[in-house]
Length: 181
Image (tube, rainbow, N blue to C red):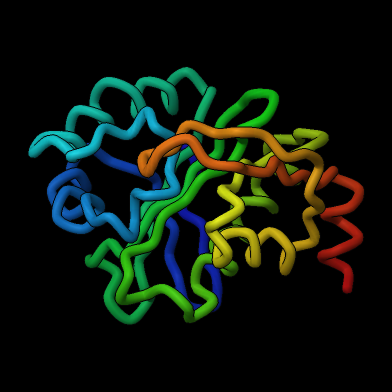
């Protein structure tokens, strides 16, 4: 299991099955899911978070193929406000979501920096790639702010339909240079 990570304002706690109830109340909002991969069912089922955690995320974490955290403000560490995850693979290594009341505050940028450090410095991967819907300006901005570069454009199947997307990338060397700034 991954360790708890900490930023200036956040605790990133490893995902647990007991988190599913809170996530089920936050996650199934159009503003949260519309730019996520179409593997996310919509409308979101009443047991969607529990089933996903039990059947997919937690087994993948146990195998060492994925690393998932819930995001919690330090001022209220029992309340989940979003999630971020890392996945071993070629093109989709990082994904995240944040509930609307906490968007636009730089919180996800903090979380991205923490998990990127984990990806490169603890897990030792050489490159991190993250897909983005072109229309998801806020997510694209996080990639720009954290030193990533856009590698290619491709059509992506998202909850909101088939849309143009981009694959963003950063290497371990580029990340370390970015962190020294």
